[in-house]
Image (cartoon, rainbow, N blue to C red; front, side):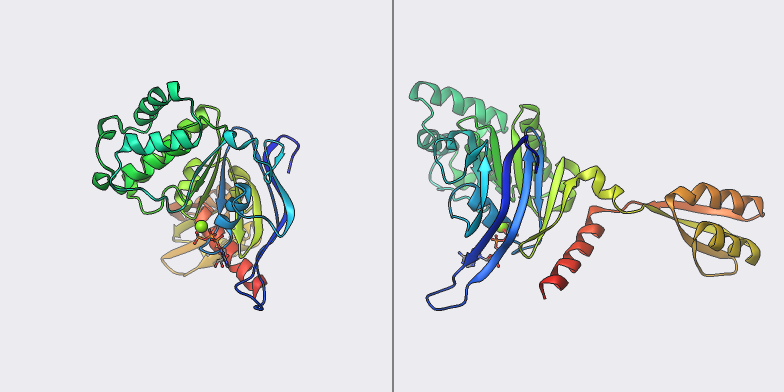
Length: 315
Ligand SMILES: Nc1ncnc2c1ncn2[C@@H]1O[C@H](COP(=O)(O)OP(=O)(O)OP(=O)(O)O)[C@@H](O)[C@H]1O
Ligand SMILES: [Mg+2]
């Protein structure tokens, strides 16, 4: 957490009591995180990790069992600052007999958008999410992607500073997801701060400035996306032909290469920083370089290893 953070979660614990007399269930184990102004923050974790629970605490919908959370310097238990935040829930309810325009009108009234400003704001928002043509159509005729865009328009109706999105891409096809991603990027361009729950790693890689990974109610990692891949050493796979046994030994000893196979083709994995050395030595010895493939430490690979570690700790 840093002083400039505009959303903070400090050592938050959440226990649920499944029923009278039953043992409490700890869902958040003292989590801490911070979101900087103007960034897209990804809160990433597998099903049941505690993402929605954290979001509900931030939105003041449920209270933490212990710890503290703030938004724009206000304790989330206060109510005066709520005008500054917008929210797209995990499974928004859309009344199918309303038109898109009526739906936004309803939320504009709830969010106390001044009467004289409402229609203009709704028009603006419909245009912004690409639904100008559908404003007068009933929601029953909307596709899932259109509904999700309308849900985002709803979250923005009162022009909030911080926008919370719970799984904004779930259930969408690749085009629908790209539409939502583009909208989220435009939110950042407009100076908004976006807090997004998701488990779609590709979207996180495409969008987020920083992420926190939560597994079984504990934060496993928090930081900038770039650090995320730099944290682990990048490696490359190199395939060589006509490699002599002497050179193979040299590659192992000098560059720590891991060799597989022998004879006509040898495949080896080596740290990125040694690729040049390996290629130089191999070519110098008369071997042939068949291919070099950098292995990007994908968020998915890292995520899976983090999840594995988290569930072992939890066991
Ligand atoms: N009201 C509740 N009472 C008891 N347990 C609850 C309650 N709400 C959530 N939980 C439990 O808390 C854990 C975290 O749930 P949460 O909805 O926060 O996960 P999530 O990370 O949002 O998962 P998903 O990706 O499936 O949306 C789950 O084990 C869930 O069953
Ligand atoms: Mg959830």
